[in-house]
Image 1: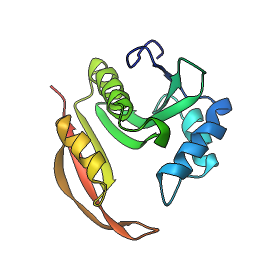
Image 2: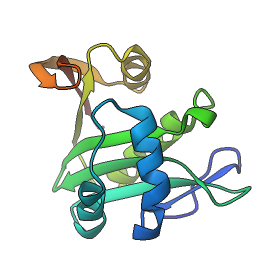
Image 3: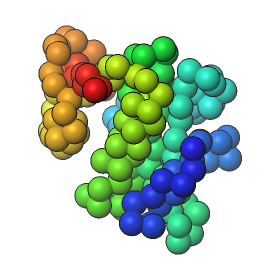
Amino acid sequence: MSGASVNGEFAFRRMQARDLPEVMEIERLSFSNPWHETTFQGEIQNAPISFPVVAERASDGRIAGYIIYWKIKDDVQINNIAVHPEVRGKGLGEALLRHALERVRAEGAAFVSLEVRASNGAARRLYAKLGFEVFGIRKDYYSNPAEDAVVMGLYLP
């Protein structure tokens, strides 16, 4: 899983338990209702269904972002993606998502879906840029604060 990078600044690899302190910091800085550490531990252990991937900075080995997705046969669910505020706006989120899409496309996936807060315009624009379309709304899906989720999906060629 390693080898992918963004301009040589980041290397992508499978998330490990030793990454969790930095992952949890990014999670808490990114979401009003963050996942618990035990959830991340479960994702690390849930191979071969779960694919937790971190972006590690080449300069200092610190974790700058992550994506977690499930692949079950030809269906993929993006469960979580976040980038540390210090490196947002530099294309890392897009690179993580493209990395996941390339991997699942090569493995024969046909469809990718995700949910995103209705108010998260930056994420929605990124997903649309990569070809995701709105498939529906999940009323009051999120809490803290309560908010609808926009369900988006992408058919892979």
